[in-house]
Length: 275
Image (spheres, rainbow, N blue to C red):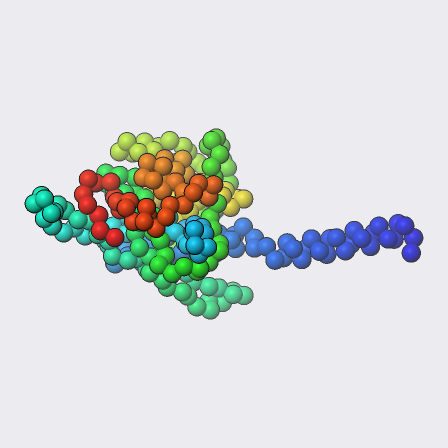
């Protein structure tokens, strides 16, 4: 075999290996499908995004980012008298149901439904309208969202994807596309960014992503099919830092122990919180 033929053979073999590796790696749309779920909370339903980490015991633990108003119906209060005789109000949450549907070769093949506890919650009227949940089942998936943690805000006109449960479970994992259409909308003293990605009731809590798959915000409200507002990731991160859950965005930060996690209040209301 000539040197030229030998080189061409090696190049061809390399291309075949590269193609095989690429075939094993899911596309960005497929990945976004894998990390997006439907959340059912009483009479309400919405969307969420999976963030998976390994705890100190080597177990895979999956958290879900969603909108606070999606799980608001799970919230309850009860009055107690503390040991010192002081009346207290205890805030508690029922578990949410997290549903992941599977489609293969264009056909629905089933779904998995698991319970998730509310770890952190912010009210939609007076807070940031954000919630962090945790699946009660460990070692469920290894798939995880990657948050956009760069300092600069993506430019207007940047192409975006949204994956959400449009109209609830019947629209589970629907993907739409659009652009970054505005930044810094100020509503009730809170900052929102704007996107043209189509969304409907049920999309709330779903992720909005760059075309490389990184999460840039959470869809929470809209004024029309292509006039939708997101909590930008910079505000999600600010809230996470303030409420001691930034490790649920940035994998470079240490994850707390179970004891430390249990000591966190569910919401910042000045009230006691039951787990």
